[in-house]
Length: 104
Image 1 (cartoon, rainbow, N blue to C red):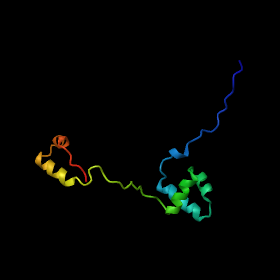
Image 2: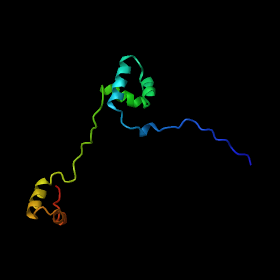
Image 3: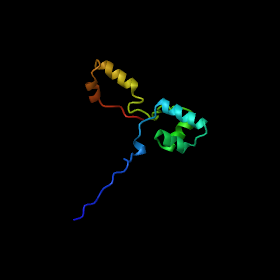
């Protein structure tokens, strides 16, 4: 049998699995953009997706993490929970076993 020769190329990395860019990288993106570089060239230079470079340049710097706005499971039950915890002297296990009020 003839053995196949496998050549090793440069390892391919998935751009979606990248870590967040450091503030220094973002500052470099803004500096290069001010020098007239296009987004694809900046992305190649810094090793990221051109979409990442576009987002940081459009934001004008580091973007703060924005957690999604959604109601919490216990939203609206704060008074009920407070009353039950006082009644059961802080025993959360007993409060958990109490019947929960139905939300309207």
